[in-house]
Amino acid sequence: MVVCMYRKQLIKDFTPNPYSVKYNEIVDHLLKESVEDFEKNGKFSDKILLKLYNVFGEVFERALELYEEKRVTHISSSTPVAKGDCYNKNNARWLLQVKGFSGIIYTLFPEINFCTCLSFRNQVIDNRVIFTCKHVLACWLATIDKEKLLYQQITSQQFQHFLLYQSFSNHTATCFATENGIKVTVEDAKCMQANAYISKPLFVEYYLKEDGIGNPLSVVIEENGVITDCSLKTQNPEGLLDFYLEEQNVYSRVVLKTELLKDILTELDPTSEIIELLLSPEEPFFRISTNGLAGICHIELPHDGDMIENFKCQAAATTKYKLAHIKPAMKALSCAYKTSLRTDTCGLLCFQYMIKTEEGNVCYVEYYISPVIDMD
View 1 (spheres, rainbow, N blue to C red):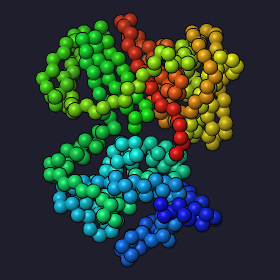
View 2: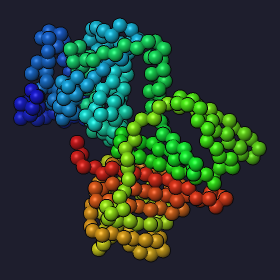
View 3: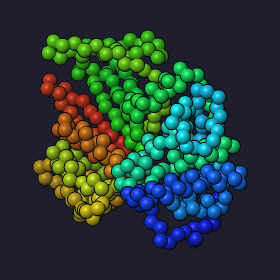
View 4: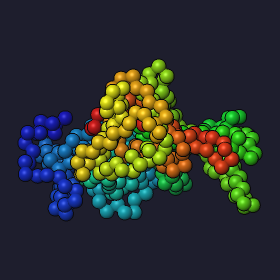
C-alpha cells in the first residue's frame, strides 16, 4: 500500500476535528482536488494519497483496501455508467453497496456522508472523533476510478422495492414458531443478538399454519374489546450466528434484582465508548468501569446481600464491551423483575431477563453481546 510509506511525513500541526468548520473546508477542497488529480493522471498520485491519509488517517488505509479489492458495487435502474465527477448527482437513480471485511454488506446513498456501520454510529455520530467511515471513503474512491467499481443493473420496480427494503433493513427480525411458542431474534452487525421467548400460555389462542414462503404473518390482538388485525410482510430469513454459552465454558454467573442493575446502568457515563466488566472470586468481585469525558469511573457491586441472589465466579477476568451494544439490553429492564448475567471463557456476555405478566405467566428476553477484541 503506497500510503504506508508516508506515515513519517504527516503534517504535524494538523489535528482532525470534525467539529471545526475549517476541517470541513479542508475535506471538501481535498476531495475536489483528488478528483482533478485522478482525471489528469489516470490514477491517484502519491501526493494525493499522502494528503488523504493526513486528513482521514487509518480510516483511509482501510478504505483503500476495500477499494483495491473491488468490494464496491454500483446498483442502478438505468445503464450502469457513472460519468463525471462524484458531485452534482442529486437526481441519480443509483446506489452503492460495499462489502465489509466481515462480509456484511452496507448500502450507501450517493453523495451522503452516512453509513449504518458501528464505526460511523459510534465515532462519527456519537463521539465525532472522525469525519467518516472506511465504507463511505471506499465508495467515494471507487466512483472516481471506474475500473475498481462493480456494476449491477436492476429494473425500476426492483429499484423502488430495493429502496423500500433499505428503509426497514435495520428493523428486520427473524421469527421461529414452534408448538411451544415463538422466538423472535434480532441481530446488530453480528456483534449483538437479542432473543425474545413468547411461550404458548401467553396467547389466548395459538395455532400454526404455513401458507408457504413469502406469505404474510397474521396477528390478531384483542384488548378491552378492541380488535387489531395485522398482516406483516415476510421475507426469506438470513443466516443468524449461533450465540450460545456452553455450560462447561461459563466461568461466571450472577443473578440479581433488576432494580440494582437498572440503577447502575443508568449511571454509566454516556460519553464512554467502552464499558469494562470485571468479575472475580475475590475482591473487588464485581466491578463496572467506564472512561469518558468525566474521566475514569468504577462502580463496585457486592457479591452478596438482598439484591444479589446468586454469585459464582471461577476465575478473575476483565472484558471490554461497546456501550452501544449494552444500551439496547437496558430496554428490557423496565419490565423485568430478575436478571441473570453470565460470561464465558471467550468473553461472550449474556443478559437474561425474567418477565412476569399480570396473569402470572413468565417469558424471557436475552441479549448476547460480543466482547471488544480489537478497538480498530
